[in-house]
Length: 111
Image 1 (cartoon, rainbow, N blue to C red):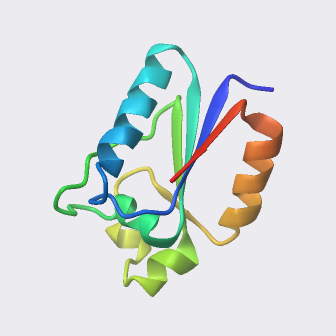
Image 2: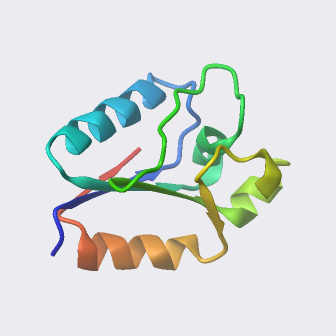
Image 3: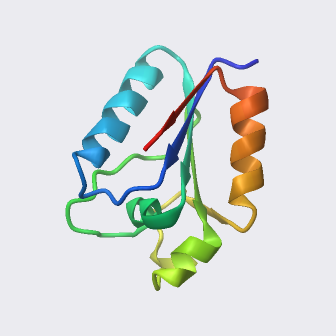
C-alpha cells in the first residue's frame, strides 16, 4: 500500500471552511511526501470550477491528483472547459474512489 491519503469531498467549498481544511491537509501531506488523491462528487465539484469566488486553489502535481465526477459537474452546468487546470473529469468516479480507498490509500477522509 502506497503512502497515500484519499479525500472524498461532497460539500461545496464555501461551507464550514471546507476549502481551508482540504488545502491544509493537502499541504501537510505534501510536506511529508505523502500523496493525496482528491475525489469531488455532489456539490464538492464546485471546488473544480475556474475562478469561483472563495475557492482556495490546490494545484495537482506529482503528490496530488484531483478528479471530479463528470455527471455532477454537468448537473451544475460546469463543462470540462470550466475546470481548473489539472483537474480530471471522470465518468466512473465512484469505482475509482472505491478502488483507491480500499487498495491504494492508508487513510480516507470524507466530508
